[in-house]
Amino acid sequence: MTIAAAPRRVPVLADLGTSSRVRDAGLVLGGTLLIAVFAQLVVPLPFTPVPLSLSTFAVLLTGLALGPLRALLSTTLYLVLGTVGVPIFAEQGSGWAFASYGYVIGYVAAAVLAGAAARRRADRSPIGTIGAAVLSTAVIYVLGVPWLMAALQIGLLEALALGVVPFLVGDAIKAVAAALLLPGTWRLLRASGHGARG
Image (tube, rainbow, N blue to C red; front, side, top):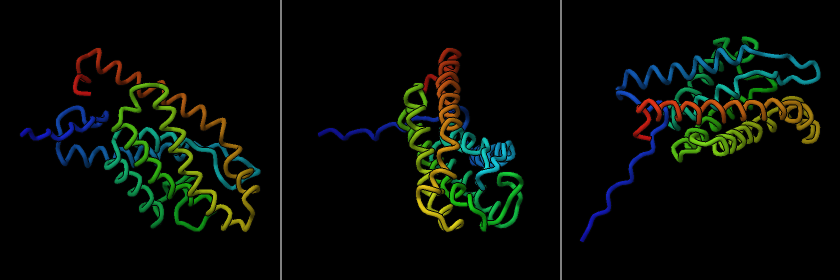
């Protein structure tokens, strides 16, 4: 009788190198900081209360690079800090009583989804990375649009016009950027011998 070996966990970028609790904590804090900094890179759109920022790109990178658990901790920390008053949301915002808060809640689910995709090697190819980006972004919209509807007392079509359509081109650019960055990083690591485990 043979006993099947437990399947080896697929590493994400953050798994490469020496593992320790201190390192993991640093990675989690680094992910939170990345999202907070990118959230301040904003292009205000006068026709919608939802700002155009790079925070969704940072959420995607955090998920893909850190994996689901660290990404969950990073985005949850970002959400909690901003909610209790630390001005780390877009345009140095904080709290919860604003129209785009639902999108921030969506960051948590999106990052976990991206991290889970990375555990399945989605970040090793451009197509896989784009697929992970599309699914993660969709989750943000699924949670963000209902909050926008409730906050503004508007219907679904108007919410889509204000909270989805203006951002689709930017989302496509972010997905392509991630599809160049993540697989490219893995190729460089493999070429240098550091990505052999993956």
